[in-house]
Length: 197
Image 1 (cartoon, rainbow, N blue to C red):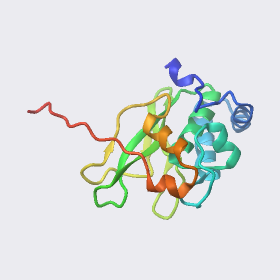
Image 2 (image 1 turned 135 degrees about the horizontal axis):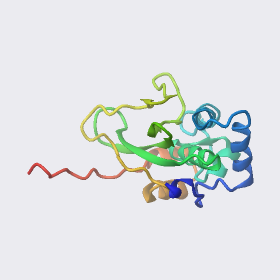
Image 3 (image 1 turned 90 degrees about the horizontal axis):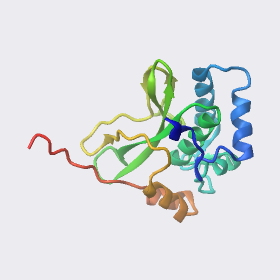
Image 4 (image 1 turned 180 degrees about the vertical axis):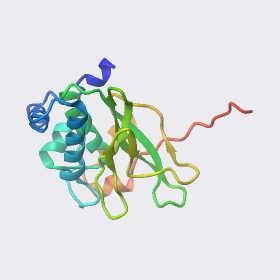
């Protein structure tokens, strides 16, 4: 569990502006669930999704996301993890594999977060930002994510990562325009389950 409380080069909550924002969000409560809700709602509602808003620059580190007020779902998950860890709440990064058009290939990764809450355990939440067809909420123990798994090839990936995975870091580091990122969204192949064979 200690690994989910540590800063990393990307989940850089020791950066002064990230730490300041984390403490400001928690100034009126010590309840971890209330703090988690405040951090989630801030990232969901106040940090603009890069593609939804057609915004640059492309951000990666939590401190960059906070500075520029924008990020793809991946970057927003880095900031949310940082804000939670800065408040001593264990948090990690999760992924879904989703169809880009609900028809199958091509697929791409979508990032969200998991937070560890006493008496509940790991709880997933998705701060990508709501819009007409997306309504993600924080309502533990019930999950209300931005996207559901609907077709073959899509999946909820079970891992809870302490840091973003390399394909995500590569895309956010390589491209400088939100449209380039959209044209090159990261993906990973699903590993077939051969247990029944």
